[in-house]
Image (cartoon, rainbow, N blue to C red; front, side, top):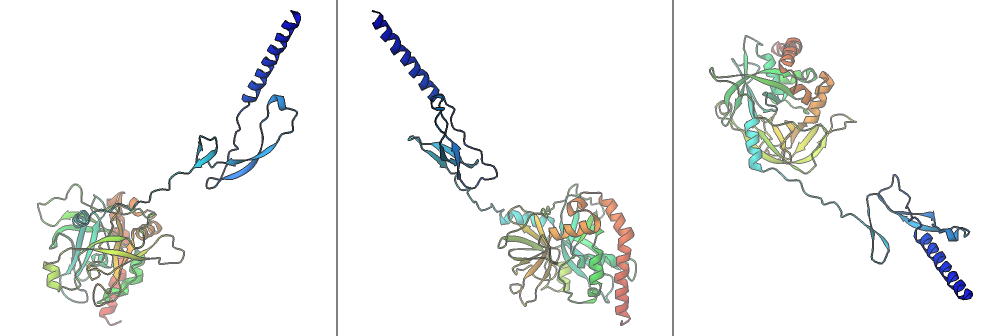
Amino acid sequence: MFDFLHAIFIKATSAVVALFLFLGISGTQPLNLPEVTGQTSQTTTTKIIEARSESAEKTAPTEREVLLIPKDKKIVITSSGDLTIQMPPPPEIKAPTLLSTSFLNEKARSATVNIFCLTKTGGILDPISGSGVIINEAGVIITSAHVAQYYLLKDYLTKNFIECTVRTGSPATPTYTLEPLYLPPIWIESNAEKIKSDAPMGTGEYDFALFRIVGPISEGNTLPTAFPFIEPANPDEQLVEGSSVFLAGYSAGFIDNLSVSKNLWLSTSIASLKNFFVFHDGGKTPDLLALSGTTAAQEGASGGAVIDFVDGKLWGLIAARTAGNTTEERELRAITISHVSDTLEDYTGKTLAEFISGDLTKEGLYFNTFVAPKLTKILTDTLDDAKSGH
């Protein structure tokens, strides 16, 4: 009887020991894969120490290779127990949604203006017509410096010798009066001699000016509480070569002076971006856009709008064109908003966005009191020399 109980005790003890050994092995902590730092684009392998149970503590540890999984990949355990990596699907590249031509046409027509400067008498200066774009609800207009310089000569030979007005609509009709807010002095200093030329040429560098609408032409009319406008693009963003842009301006190259005065219509067109240029080595952002020839490639379109089809923002200002008998043979040149903003920041300490959102009354007072008289003197001296034959 004792032998029988002893045998049962031995078997029970063996079963318990076996059970503890099994629990010890199965309870071993799972392998922790080493974390990969600074590496997310590829998988690698590394050596790790194989986990051991207590019953094998006298056995020398072994090494094996395991797969290191980049953090951005999803680990999948298959039904067979194999470790695989499920790669994320490639990002879907979608073409940007473009705004409709009709929408941009309406937007451009509401914010593009004609700046018309008429002299009281003939002489060395002829009337000039250019385009401009309202760029904020306060009525700030951006235009070309070679158009805006005429405003500096408004009292050249006699009081109100030149009258400059803002005209809107099609045909263009006098609507608003304006005052200058800023014109780069460096442009006047570099281009004053060209005011005597019948067909001045230029690169477009620094060729911009800022005006503000200050009153209605007709007595009894009032200014709107907010003007329709086209928001300037972020200077840090760039257009893509080959993309389409929408153009708007009061082209007047193929009509006579009477038609410019009485029957000038706003024209719009679509052009493609052919190339980028910088004015100086080391430029970080494009200063000049080269656009395919359209109906806008003629006199009068200077200061007109270059609008992006993606965001509807103002990306450039028509400034110049290449030579050609027809508009199709010509290329348009447009200075970029980044060039305008960089120039303002260099000379005033304010970007375009900061300038037009600031105290416009203060900006206008400073420019017209301290800056404009010096620029006017440069221009009048140039004209006086031309009259005297120098």
